[in-house]
Length: 560
Image (cartoon, rainbow, N blue to C red; front, side):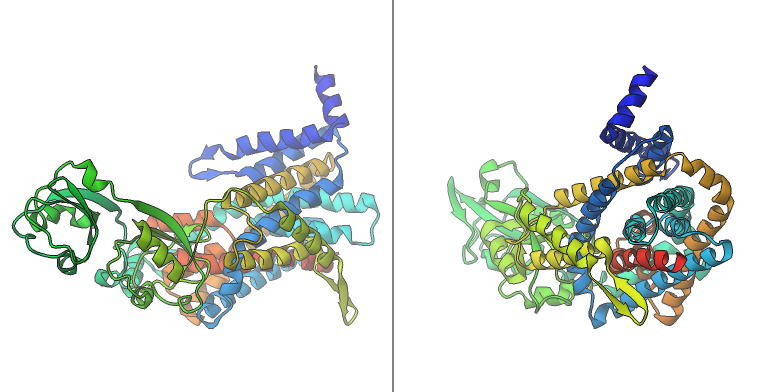
């Protein structure tokens, strides 16, 4: 039986790849307290174990899977990357540059101290910073070195070993630093700091916001009493701004919304209201009743992508005032997300192009409002495979182009070229959705499967040489991993607070984003009870995804 399994793995390496992926994902899900290894590290670890039987896995698989991953990252980050290249985001862009530059310096410092080769150095950076893109772009750079295949394979093996050794502390260390150590170093109470920033963003002025934070829209039916008798719908809504009367049923006759319609006692009305106001509806309107007919008015919930130049860079408060004719349109904000992360629904929260606004309201009003904001994001599950395949081809060709700065050869590499093209296509798609559709589920599949499969192949390629590499450099890599994980956020913490003067909550989100690590931001959100760290996270995440990927070839060039 064992001989059959070994024969199957050696003669059919695709079986080994998918076995490493499946077992690695399952291991990555195991929770140890609040920590879990994750799919990529799990797949790489299982690849290292399975690879001990001696396999010949095609090296081209590694490049194919990495291209899928880096393309998805670029496509998702494109709108945010280009929209944040302006003065309002300059501090956060500079913060990411400083953190990435410090990280690169720390990696090269450890290389100089311990004399690692290019493989160990690239794996150290990828694992300690939990950014697998470094390993992908470094692999492309290693492939271009003037070395024989045996030497290159040894570098690939060393890279996988270094990543596996440094990844665990890289993940845990950053979460602990951002969630616990950084607030203590600055003497910040997370909940107090969050409340302070929310006040700055206008939480004390809820009447100036389109929707009140942390509430949901509810629908109720009420029988009109004496207090509302004789008021037109317009007059009633002027007195109660968080209520919208959508339908009136009078003596069995359905009367659709008309602002001039006068309410009569014993009319039955269907209303939208914010949850905080439903306790007062009995007093303002009359007793609540169960009346399906009055509640059967047409409604729609949509996601609107903000694309209008005139509204980008404005606060929610300013956008509300700029939307003509929408003061009482029965439309309510459910959420506003940026790169899939919820923004705080506060009056002075600044929106940017590509932000997704989830709205609920009557159909006609929602469509009119969407036209003023940008475009409705259609629920289309089809991907434009032709555009994205050609994008990967164009990116790979672009990455092969090279030039020289003095005596130094400079090229993007396949990973860098694909990333650049994906950024452009993602940005263009956010403004012209008919071109290059790639729904969020498809982006996730490209990214998650591509990266996990890449990790599995890297582990399998490392093979038996991994054990010897661990024995020779294991301790040095552990020490180096601690330095590379903690030094960049430590330097950036004080730079962001005392040079850039960032608010602590924005700063902590920026720390997580600049190291492309969502787990540490989620820790801050959990401890503070606020979504305000998202403001700093998204810009830094987009910028660092590009900068850290670029670090891979630089590390290989200097270390080799």
